[in-house]
Image (cartoon, rainbow, N blue to C red; front, side, top):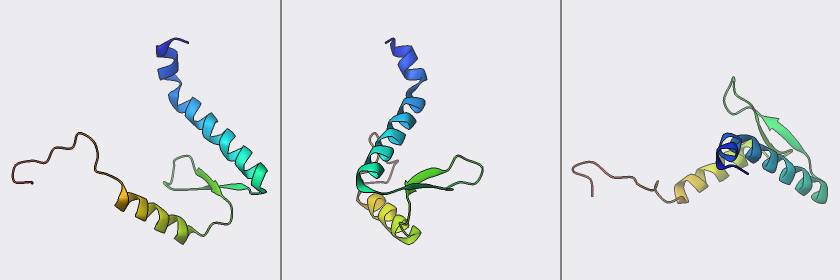
Length: 80
């Protein structure tokens, strides 16, 4: 496969992979997915049906707190 074709189709390939994994996991565990609108006007994200939105927000917040700083970040003058 040519690298240009791969690069041009990265988002589509990622979406297909995520959809396939979610379908297989849900089938194996007897779960279902449902769309959730994160940003109005944009495509919804798929999530496991029945998970309370408060739990999702809490989990996302904890992940953001624990994630390392962005690579390549350089603080400006006066930052330690």
